Image (spheres, one colour):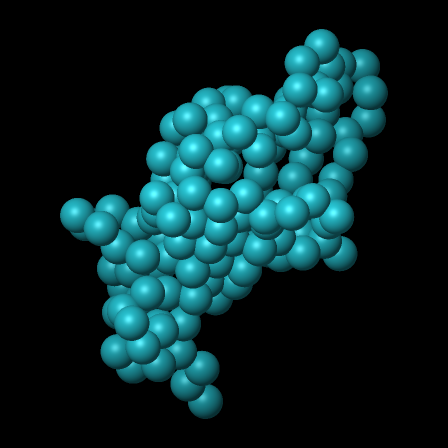
Length: 141
């Protein structure tokens, strides 16, 4: 049984998406908020926390994440986002719908790690040979 449409070339697209997510998450984990926001389209929508309204536009994502991360300014916590189990589906407009599991590991010195499991529901577009996130909606397990 084939579950992936034939027009999606997984031999090249899938590893490119994996590399995109690896670079994007390293920006986020390195607290490079501007760099992370640069991996979204100018008109992107980003919903990452229950009860918090989605951020819209790159500038909106930067403002939202700076506000969100203020509570961690004096916290030595390191977060690592592990993205896997990526399911890609082509959309009619040429974009990709990506549904991926994301395990967030929160580590503080001398404490047990905390694990948070979520699902990223993304729409990815390609511009100048690079992927960008047009929308991301995160749901938590």
